[in-house]
Length: 76
Image: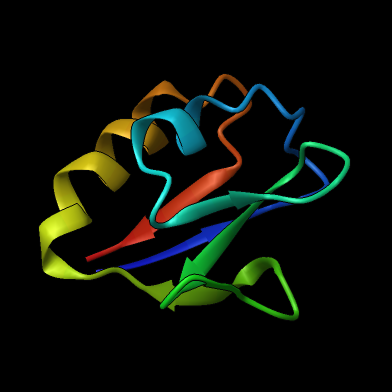
């Protein structure tokens, strides 16, 4: 599974980082970034996908479904 976040759409609600802090990191402005091995994916954006460790796949799908702006995209 892979995940991306459209930072332009993210409002900083922090739901994703509460559900899965190992995959979703917040920058100093509260905008979420997907992470691999604790490192934020750079560059971000809706076309940059981070690989999700298998143990976090359910949480990532849950975070994506609860994102109020739909900023999180999941690829299976």
